Image (cartoon, rainbow, N blue to C red; front, side):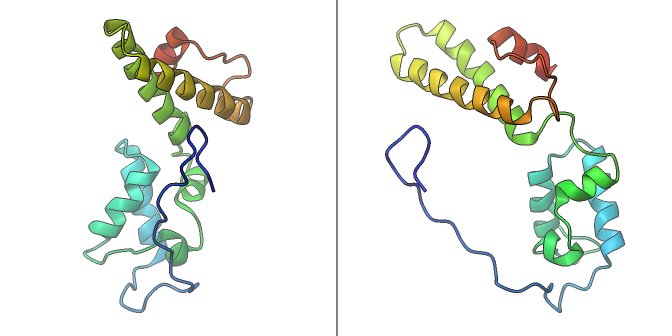
Length: 154
């Protein structure tokens, strides 16, 4: 699939294994995995980083290659069940943080036309994603501006 604001297609990533069962060498209980996920979320770790930590560090010394095959649920589903989900969706928060940083850069470097255009594209993505999340996970009256983004992150 093509990217949103370029003509390029991007690089293909690796595919997940076509199995529905966890590998036999990873025999950690699902309750233990879920407890570790909630513990990491309470420490302030993002859901994508939780998956990376479980893959690299594991639970009780055993790495967890894929949370969904091991537990049957995604990380965000586990967090929702335990009321430990982040206030703002992770992808929306990352876009807001990037826009705040880019806006400050463009304010300092007024002749940086490349990044001015990149900021416009980024703001377009934020508005589109805000329409998707509006009402459910962000307030109904949220309207993107630089000041609102800064306040929303604090």
